Length: 448
Image 1 (cartoon, one colour):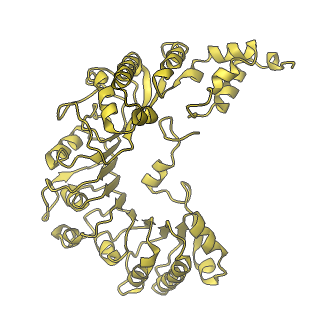
Image 2 (cartoon, helix red, strand yellow; image 1 turned 180 degrees about the vertical axis):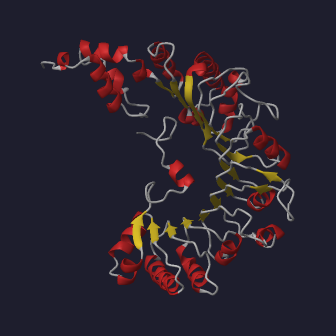
Image 3 (cartoon, helix red, strand yellow; image 1 turned 135 degrees about the horizontal axis):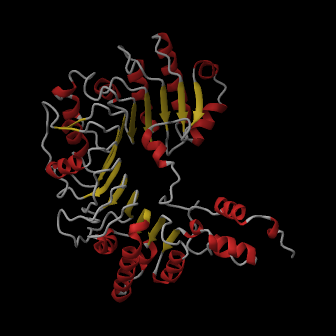
C-alpha cells in the first residue's frame, strides 16, 4: 500500500499521534505508539523523535520492566513522566515470595531512577502491604516535578502490613510541586506543604488520633479539598461540644466516609472551616444527636455559614429537618444512592412549616433501585408545589440516568412548568467532589 505520509511534516504527524493516543491503555494491548512506529519509516521517525509519546509508563508485572526501560530511554532527560504501577493482579494472584521480592526490588530501582522526573505517580495494589514495601525505596528521594501521587488498594478487610515506623515519611528530600495526594491504608506521607487536595482513605483508627490530624493540617496550610474514609469505629478523638479546636482557613470541600460511627460527628465538631462550600457525608450510621444538639450549632448561621453544597449518601431521610437546621444555607442538595422507600420522610420535611432550606435551588438524587420511581415523582410534585406556595421555588431536579429518564417521560405539567429536570453529569452538577470524580487524569483508574 502506498504511503501518503511524506506529504505530512513530522511535527504534524506527532500532533496527530498524540491526539490519537489514549491516556490509559489495557495491559494486554500493544501501546499505540509501538504500533505506529512499525507502519513506515516516516511514522517511525516521527514517533521516536517525539519524547512525549513515550512519557506514559505502565508497570503491571515483572514482564513490564523491559518495555518500561525502553520507554524511559526514549523520553530524553527533560520530559515529565506519568508512571503507573498497576500491580493489582500481580499482588492478588502471585504467592511465590521470591517473585514478589524480585518485583519489589525492580520497582524500587525503576522509581528511584525516574521519580525526579515524575509528574504523576499511581501505585495500585491488591492490599497495602505491597505498596508499603515499594515505597520504602522512596524514603530519601526527591521529586521536584511530582504534582499528583495516588496510592490505592482494593482489599479493605485484611489488616495492612505496615513495615514503616509510625510517622515515617517518603520523598524527604522534597516534593515542592505536590498538590494532590491520595493514600489508602498507609500512614506515611510525603512533604505536604503545597498540598491542595488530600485523600486519607482506609484509615487506621488507632493511628488517626486528633493530634495526628492536627499535625497533618498544620503541615498543609494550602489544603482546600479533604476526603477522609474510615471503616472502623473511631473513639480517640475528643468531643468538642462547646467550640471548634482547629481552624482550616482554606478548606472548601470536605468528604467523610465511615462504616463505623464516630468520625463524622467528632470531626465536624472539632474543626472550623469558614470557607467550606461543600460537605459530603457517607454513612449508614444515624447517630448524629451530638451534632444536632451541640451548642456550636445553636447559631447555625455562623458554623459552616458558607456551605452551598450538601451531599448525604445512603441517607434514610428521617433527619432531613435536623440537617436543614444545622446547615441552613444549602443551595444544592444531593441525595446519593438514596433509598427511595424513605422518600416520604423527605416529603414531610419539605412540606412542613416553617420551610427548610430557603436558599435551595437544586435537588439532586441518585438511586440504586428503580422500584420507587413513581413514589419519588409524586413526592417531588408535592415538594415543588409547596415550595412555590411559600415563594421559595425549587429550580432544578437532577437525577441519575434511569430516574431522570423516568421523570422526563412522565406527562407532568406541574414538573415541566415549574422546574427543570435533567440528568446528573459534571456539567449540570458542579459540586466539587462530583466534578473531581469525573476528571480524566493520567492517574485515573480505567481506560481512556
